[in-house]
Length: 549
Image (cartoon, rainbow, N blue to C red; front, side, top):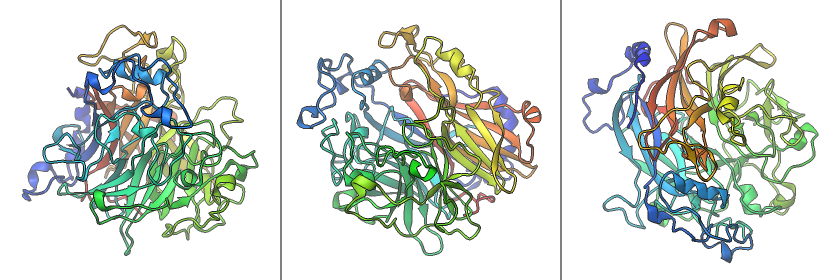
């Protein structure tokens, strides 16, 4: 099911100096310091998940958004043809199990931890559980808490095999124009080194998805920062949807899910293109974030999709002085936010939230609506030090032509971008692509061959760029970055493609593209049939020396 390149043996030195799986004697420990965790989604592959001819989205007739598929679903629930239903239902998705795979830094699988779900023995509708949406490529990013003791991620409080939950409303922020006539809480999950889970429900991200979460639990604090997107209805969006977009600060719950009653979403940040002097977008849609990290007491986010806002790297400004025109640098005296953003509840739906986020100086700042060509698609971000930032760019995902492989291979900014700070601004040093095999199709055991009848494009996936990443500074002056790949293919939804975990080692102080040309990615794992890989992080309890919160 999973493959490993023989070339990855060059990464074997990483095991030295790290606590190995076999060297610990605590038998009740689930995760071992120094290893990696990869989040994996597995589709149930049940033909009965979707009945041919059923109207999609389910219950759409009960909404003012109406039904988009007048003739019903053309494909049943069999993988991978089921994802062609997205051609007729833009909200299409099916919930699936989440696994946390513990692997060595060189890619060897140790074990897997299944996140509680209703398919397991003893899990009832009232039990704590969490799922993801199989084809939603931006979900279940993994992050360590600020003290390194917990791993955090986001999902849905739902059974597996539920349709269109990823675009459903949350119970406390219902948009009647959302054509998905269902409600489901989003939730933050935390898991410790012993494999113990705790879940916190939220009404944020109604109409869309929560994507990443970090627990701030140092210096007496105890709350989550999250990133995601909200809204699946018409304009203007209800106040609850606007409040639940983008960036949230959430108090952890100590109660079982069945006893939780989350209130109004609590945003912690917001950005609008009006900060750049541009005309206002759809309220709430500039706040459509993917990547999330903390460095030097500053929250950083990325936006890499959507027609609104700017595809770029952002930071949250707690000083109120860092970026009077929407672009700037964090203050050296910045502190992490500890309270929600203050706003006027009477005009949120019409005026949006106050702006307290900035584009990081040097990164793209042209609004998507006015850009001639959008070439930035940032996803995961990782700081090696105060002057070195790695940004994963997932590529443009263009499958509109018959030359999708050629197009993917020709991209110059997709892959791992290295940005360096010169004291006043950030500049792109180079983009690492060697070994990613952009646009080169690969085969999956059991996968169809030839062209997908739904798109008339080839089934075989090819790497298009990178999504979530993590990294470590090595003692020899290099850094190693682990990354999850994005894909292009003829699949109806490329988010359902089996993708890969890759790794590359870079010289930390190097800024020469010529020198970097000798560095290459190695494939450590490949998802199998009806699987996708989503997030990557070090294990809870890992002492990552370079982390500076």
